[in-house]
Image (cartoon, rainbow, N blue to C red; front, side, top):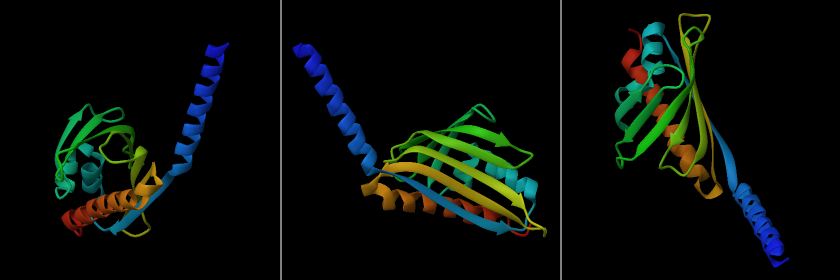
Length: 168
């Protein structure tokens, strides 16, 4: 009987801890976009190749290594700041609709369930919109820091793309 009570108490404690952890976890969304007038296919080729991120965001990423192509490909990024690795998996690649989505599998950052999508949408003019959206979970104490970190990454990537391909 004591073993039964111990099991119930342990299960109750675990459920309580999970509940407390869930109360401290927040879902964060970050979204940035730019309007660009450039060679759409050239820009899409650069953006849709996550193995190219060290060239698109050299301020943040020192090296990229890729395994595979398209959906299911794994990309490992080495961060300049501390040499830490971020591992991502491409979960969607649609070249016709110009949409790529990926998830972080491993990261040194205090976040989880990171999912991002980069898309290009043609406007009525010769311009197009590049939109970068991400959603992730983090502890409330890290919310602002992680929001700022992801926002800075998105803005840097979009700004670099604009500077590299603008009005070609």
